[in-house]
Image 1 (cartoon, protein in one colour):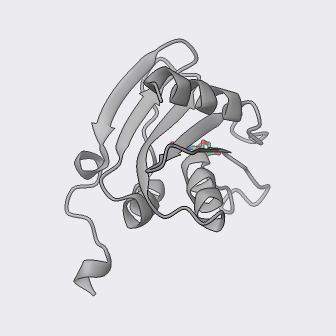
Image 2 (image 1 turned 135 degrees about the vertical axis):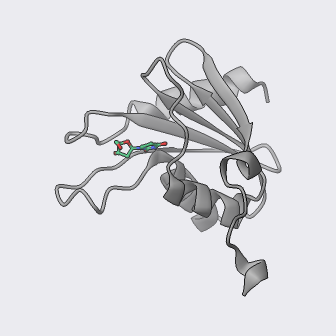
Length: 129
Ligand code: THU
């Protein structure tokens, strides 16, 4: 799959975002090792703290569908500056996706590209338990 296809899927998912409080809509598209694309959007809650980011929605959807190996994730927001995954999402992505490629984009162009290990140096994970 081309990068542009994954980014397009994340842009489409972003349209489903439920973000009435922040008005900050995010879409994510996670590619499994076998090339399946699972999307997510942020879903906010009036309590604020129960909000879940697009990246975690995509990962949990994928896990609940039985996917266990992942290649990369595209994250899209309508911002000039890159919107990288928050700390909680980095931890969850690392747990289940390992050193994923993280592609950042807005509605027009790619805004960044990173390995998750660069975004989450010195991770805490199951190997330390
Ligand atoms: N958000 C995401 O969904 N992913 C990110 O990478 C950054 C933040 C959401 C959470 C909240 O609904 C809104 O963006 C503002 O923080």
